[in-house]
Image 1 (tube, rainbow, N blue to C red):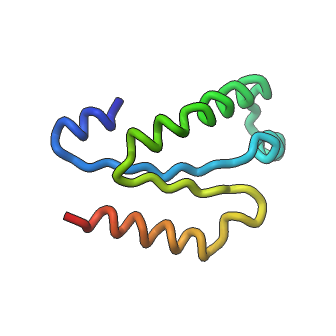
Image 2 (cartoon, rainbow, N blue to C red):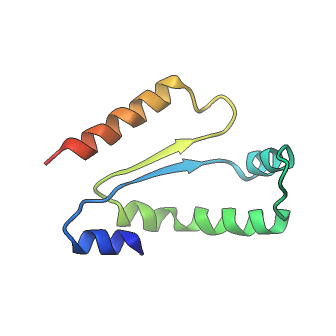
Length: 92
């Protein structure tokens, strides 16, 4: 994993997790020109959801979860996330 390599070189790492409900993800995929098999989306979504505790632990220095469902991703959320990312990047 790239995170492990970066940590070996002494870097602090972080993660911004963009989360979308399964139903919303499936709905958005149907609206796109390209297609992704529904079963694949369900499998990947479940796998990623199960890995959130691992990611939170692995990126314990900096982990932000942002929900990207209807009405949840707004300017205020993006501004707060950007501020936190910048603070992470500039801290010693």
